[in-house]
Length: 202
Length: 202
Image 1 (cartoon, rainbow over the protein chains, first blue to last red):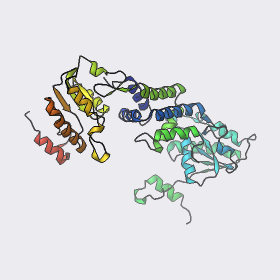
Image 2 (cartoon, rainbow over the protein chains, first blue to last red):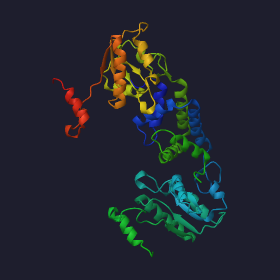
Image 3 (tube, helix red, strand yellow):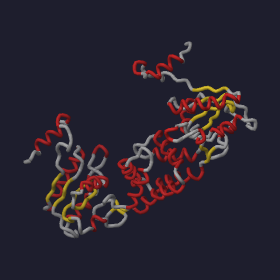
């Protein structure tokens, strides 16, 4: 026997299906939901449904958005000739937090990962190529590959670099090196090797 | 600027209002919701609303339940003369998992905690007293105080013991000592003192 309420049992199951949430955490979350006001729970449920109903993919950058094309792709305050390629939508948030990037984005929807059965055709690479083609609205000067510095990220970056160079576009990649505020003596060899190779003037 | 979708922003906010879920975790959860099928999201939203609409408190044990009185309080397979007093509904799950307890429960809805402004009147103690009164359906022989072995739990246990003893009911408390599988050399002094004081024959 578990909970003496089927509705609680069912919500625990729903919560524990989410990533990083186990049964114990789900129970704690449901205990919180039980203490929430009816209006708050209704707002939560409505937000869940709205995301599924309203969120679309931007026809240009493939990012999630309520309006197509998205605010960034429509903006004349952004440099439409500079495209930053990221794996997931959440990576855009991190880049926007810097407040330094003025260009636009392209969301691949993942990285090439043969072990997980994800090849180039499973990513939104075709849509990226289209943005470089003759029918594109903006002329793209530079493509920044902002994929994670992992094996899968490196594979994806090399694949894209080979694919994009024939279009006469400049292809760059985020610098790899020591993270700001880190301790050199605790750095791993791969990072330190990169930092040495990429050293520059002060 | 944050997400390029207001619906996503709103769901991130809803998730991050839940306990133990920060903004980063909320973003990860929303990314998962975006990948869920529409049917699954609808099932989730429905489960949320159902909990608020259907879950009531059992008129006897005060536990959360869909039917009043709850299955445990109605059951003739449970010893209705043995009542285990717990702070929260989730504690019942832990006790039921042992498969050893045959009695019924009483949920206080918290413990006495002057620092948090929670006094005896904020707990469902009145309802517990009623179960011992002359109008009660079942004669209660024993009340087991299954509150956490913390300062607040101890305070609550002492308060209840004083309150319940005049009713001629036996009041007991869960044993405190070494947890099964633990290492004596890593035990704290308080636990070890308790384990010494509560030592018994093999």
